[in-house]
Image 1 (cartoon, rainbow, N blue to C red):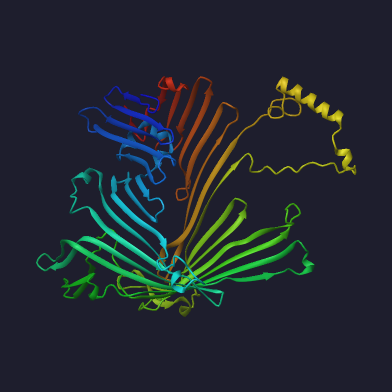
Image 2: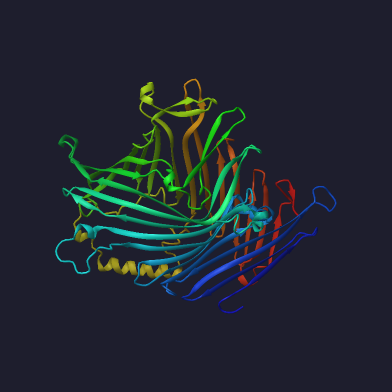
Length: 634
């Protein structure tokens, strides 16, 4: 179109009536912004007219990406990442079968504008979010979302301080305000929803206030209070209809303020321990350091289920068996920001973090030594709720991080259950207020754990760093200096190689062309352990392991050939769940690609050859398999 915008229109048509059209455009304004958008529309016809399997579907997709240059406006930033498609688009687009987008079950889109006032602590942002789940055609739209924030300030700080810092000058506070409006519904009924009755909206204000003081120069004391205010435009009153024998709800519109707060007081410090190994163990290990960081905090919040707050209510009814029942509910359970919790909270939390390092001699290091991390972090945390009537002790949370190699850390977390389980009147397992050690089952039981890691192997993974070769035959350093004759010979050899193209980068020592075969293999693995079935004989849960494995890779045996693949393994079925392979060849002016799914319900292939020039990229030939997933394409 011009120097800043281009446009490409493409179409496809099939013999039995299916057709599609798409538009692609890229735009750029130097030092201002850049972006691109894709719009596609498909009409897919399956079967013959009049036959039972005849169907006609219409789907579309919108992809938009926009980035603003940081130099354009430092105060105002606008960005967009939109990926929206109707639920049947991927299943009816032929090209989707040969890329990873086919296995995506969710899509998300975000448009954001942020304004930061220069020299001010205030910032404003507006966001629109769309999340869609293709499995059941569910749309979750949140628009508009407005956020106002003020970074932390010290309101009592003196402008001209004289002497030391006063205690009240350490008090700091910040502010954040949010407005949200959202709706979650099926795609076919989304636009039929009422803006007032079905959309959820509300405002929230948060003001955290905190300070940090030092006691005895070793212990830090951090008191804090967090105040929250929610604003809703409706509340729901529930009652029992004796004639219909069911619960009925009545929505009352108005303006309602829901206020809550919580306070905390934390103590933390650091304890250092040093250990020097005994001499008979050698002098390789110089010192071992252990850093312990204990944290003790007390949290308190009142019971917002008390009738004085008017956040909760109840109704009573008589069931079919003649028993009196009571149902407690909140007026604002439908609120987008939730409702303050019921019950008084007064808990004592404990966290213990550990770090273990070792210092060893290293002649290659400039300092003569280097540090080795034995345990990067080992933490234990739990809490005890004094205000609860039962199950006061929370599960024990543990985590450990080990640095195995330079660029790889192993993270492992676990949850430990302190209570036993009994069967209720319905025969379902329920946690009871009795510790495991009281039943002779030990102190804790592992309830969940898991870890995940990913790693990429390539040509350089197994290569060892070559040490510089030095002459160790006993000659002096003066003999190692190149002579004038050697320098002349080296320059002559360099000129000869430059003329003939026989250099070290493209040829080996014998003058033959080097064979380079770049390759890479990425492995992603995750494993988790959790409760499975309940054993009614042992009155305990059985453990269950869950594993996920996916891998991808590529290899380039020659300059113009490239092979790539991606696959996932199902441990329950014990077989490959999905695999996609691709082979491409650079034909100088043309490019050729063959993609195929060799197994599974989407077994198919696709062959593509096209001109490499962007001006002639629509000059191409495609050949696809006739069937996929038992559906005939037209």
